[in-house]
Image (cartoon, rainbow, N blue to C red):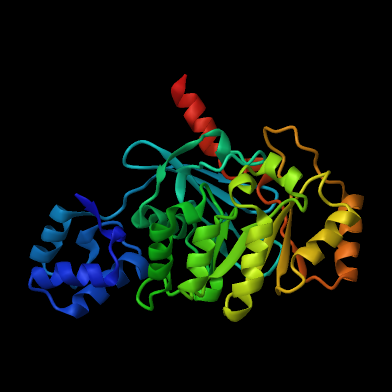
Length: 347
């Protein structure tokens, strides 16, 4: 059986046409799945019993099973652990306010089981790469979080487990379905896809004129420091990415955000000056994220260091926002909960 959420509108239209059904039935189906967020084909009451039965015989409605749920007493952040059909684990995070917009309800979703990138500060890296998520597994995270919280998010960030641009086709297919008028109907400007810097995929993304927000994880301004924490620097140096952006990005309509995890050793005045120089011809927004405490030995940033770093950036007129480190009391950083689950089940 197949996951029905893996299918785009046009793909399901072909299926329904072969079943002798009209196009409007597909719109109704999408409304049931994403707007009404049903858990069973039997709930689709404007479908005949025969059609519901045929759908149930051919498709699985929900590929994920909720495994655990944690609520932060500090900031209301919720962490969700899901079990996949092949007994793997992924995480999603519901952020009631990430410090950048008081009205924002954000779901941070995963794109892979584990991750192949090996970033030193990332808990998911310790799991290693297992496999890509299908479009349906990506979308089902949103369905479950909406159902469990009773709230409809207005923002999506692909910043959970995995490197989204290593699962390019499935991530973009899921994002397109989120954007459907009869899907989740989330604006392209409210969907952000983050990458550690997969150069060919970034160029493809720009060339395809995709309109979702693009976020790039930089996290260091010196290549020799960045490669220690982010091995992707060796294959795709950020200097080359910056040159690509300088050449192509000004012609695009996307918003470009540079994600910068602040440690105790990457927020000097020199780092601030190098940031400005690196993007002097590209309009960016800088999103600063204090390093989340975890199972690592990396230096945490001090309040005074952060304050000084911000002053240097303000002098150079770089738009800056600070994203609070959310859910620290519930293993908020992606990969912490899954990593524990893998360790427990291997015992």
